[in-house]
Image (cartoon, rainbow, N blue to C red; front, side):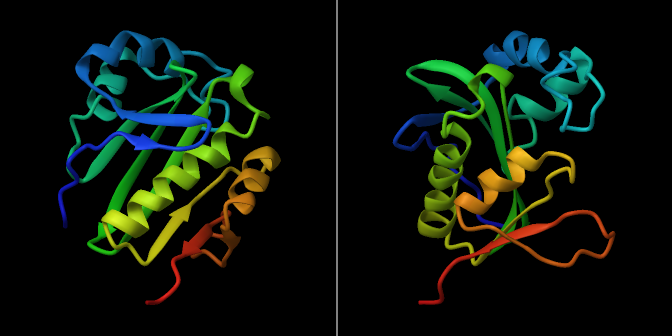
Length: 162
């Protein structure tokens, strides 16, 4: 596994900054909201759960980011390693930030980092079947549905071979 240096990532509409312990109050508030977690497990999370998972404590295996639009936090994104050349992305936006192209923009910034700086070959996402908006957003950035062992939705992005 290649440790990431917790780099800030830049999209056109978004900027992704590594989360820190200082973000715990913000993230705990988001993840305790049923609207925010509707397609992220569906169950509000406790402050302790958020602290363990989303403020950078799982680095380097999982890299956690705040998604900013015009300098304002609008969502959370992470990528995780399956091995040194592939892994997955998770992304969730505040309900009022959806439908503005921010998700695809943040995804493109993540993909540029994963394929460019980290040399990944493949990235997967596992959207909830009922989250049609997310599936469309992933498709806009080049993800395609592929068969999964569980029968649940699985989408992948493959970087061009060099």
